[in-house]
Length: 372
Image 1 (tube, rainbow, N blue to C red):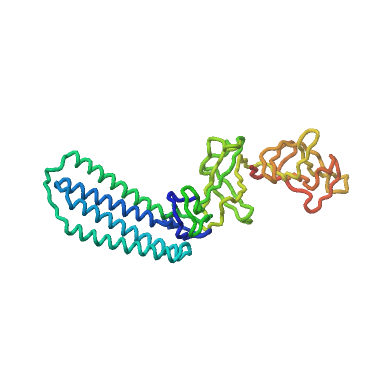
Image 2 (cartoon, rainbow, N blue to C red):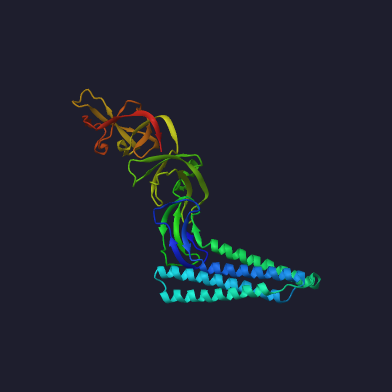
C-alpha cells in the first residue's frame, strides 16, 4: 500500500487497477505549489544569510545589507504569488475555485512584481563600504551557523517537493486505487496498492507431523481450482522455524514464475509432496480395502473348479503401507504381483462368495511406486 508522507490536494492519478507499472513510474501527483513557495522562501533566507555573512566579513553593516535583504524578500513574495496563480488556475480548471479567486491571485502577483522592481532599483543604488577587520569573530561564527540552518531548510523543502510524487517501488500491477484527482492526501492513508505478481509466492501451512519431510529444495506439485487443467512443479524455497501466529502449522514458501500474470493474489492452491517412496511396492485401489475382525483386508479372487463362476472371494488380511489419495501399498500372505483383487463393492462380499467378473469389478495387484 503506497501512501503520501505529505498533506495536499491530489492533482493526478496516472494509473488504474490492472495496469502494469515499472519501478520509479509516477503513480500519483500531489499539489506542491505551497511547498515550492516554501522552497523559494527558504532559498531567499539562505541568500540573505549568505549575504549577511559576506558583509560581516567585509565589515559592511550599512545600507547594502538592508537593500539585499529587502530584495530577497521581494523575490520570494513574487515567486509565491506566481505559484498561487498557477495553483488557482489548476483548481479553476477542475471546478474547485471561482474566476474571482483567479483574478484576485493575478492582482496579488502584479503587486508583488511592482514591489520586486522597486527593491531591485534600491539594491542597485546601494553602496557597499566597510572594513573587513571590523566584524568580531563571534558574530561571524553566529552568522555561519545561520547559513547552515538556512541550507538545511532548503534541503528539507526540496525533499518535501520530491515527496509530492508517489512512484512505484518495483515492477508490478496496480491492484487497488483508493483516490481520484481532487481528493485530499493524508499521511499514512493508502492511495494505491501495487503488487509484484511475477514471481508469486505460495504460502503453505505445514502441520508439525509433516515438518520432517519439508525443507528448502523439497519438490512439490501444485494445482489451482480456478485454473483447471494446469499444474506447476516447483521446489520449496524456505520453511519458517516458528509456527504461524494463531495456528499449529509452520509456513513454507514456494516461488512460482508468473510472466503472464495468470496467478492472482489470494488464489488457493492444492499442494502435493512426497513424504516417502518405495520402488516395487504392491499397490491396489483404496476401494479394494475392507475392515474385518482381524483388521484391514482385501478380497482376492481364488479359482474354484467346482463353482460355475469365475472364482470365489477369499478374505485376505493385509498390512498397509504408503498411500496416495487413490491407492494403498499392501503386503501379506498370498499378496503378490498378478493376484486379482476385487474392488467393486467388496463390502457386500463374504469369505467364499462366488464371483463373476464383469467390467470394472476387479483389478490386478501390481508392483509400482507408492507414495504420499
